[in-house]
Image (cartoon, rainbow, N blue to C red; front, top):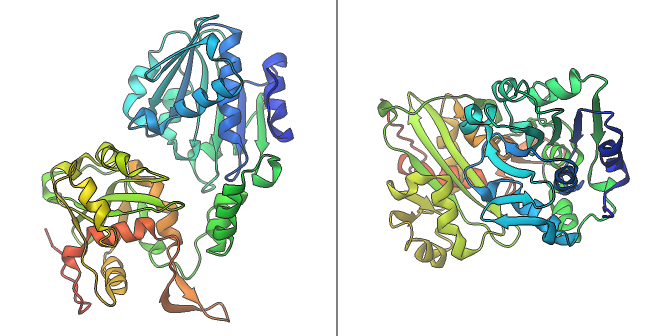
Length: 400
């Protein structure tokens, strides 16, 4: 099996023979082929011995959110399907009996600790893994040697994954930094997306594509309001506000579920996906925000045909109302909140909301015009809170 991988990642594959490292860290921006390499490494590990290969991330609400599809496609890419049994989310190596298990750490940490014969851990999007999850996962009883593969795009220097595996790494840790320009097979479609992002917010571009820490620009609209908080919804929060922004060929469909309580906004769930087929949209929204079946959700009215289609699965969905200045009025409403708290389950929306910005003039000073970029979650959020927004810019916030 001859693996196609960027030169920088080859030491991770060599380690399968040398066993010089117990932990392999691959970090950097988008397009560096990290996830593809992770899948290939997991497949090769499955030929070495039996035991369990745990594929995990902090939040996994369905198998579609996991590394499963990447592993399956990699198996077929290298024509290894005859060696594996692949049935409805389960992958087993027929030669060794090793099994791939897919799980979200937050909701399965107790059961994960009791996994018998755990041999390899593959963590994708590890920037989202909390210190609490790592504290449970790393001391898990060993079956022989357990090797950890940690793949992530650095977000903040204080994040648990960066602190544990970079700042406090030991000599048994292989640290690889890789970005899009290190990948000789960097896809043309990603290059077009990179070029679009290059014309947008510089801080967000550097984070997404160059693997640099996320920096908040001075012209950010909401950044100073955003705070991560692990909160619990209780009856005093009232009913949720749910908003949906439809994606096109290169833009993500985004959904947000939030609550208003004591002058602050609480974002409980968020999800987005690029290239989501219309036939799959309803199921995706329900899977990630089940409350769309119980409460009204407001979606971008520019796509009435999409709303009509999705309404067959989500009867309570409706189009939002737009008027001249509705974007600005929605922004004013968001800015009146004392804080916008984001639950760890919804942290996927943090970076984009932080990058949501005003345009700048020729002197790089913020103007009052809003950038039509980095706004998929922001638009969904505006649609969600439409009931408290008025065209006159007078905002009524429900106080509990």
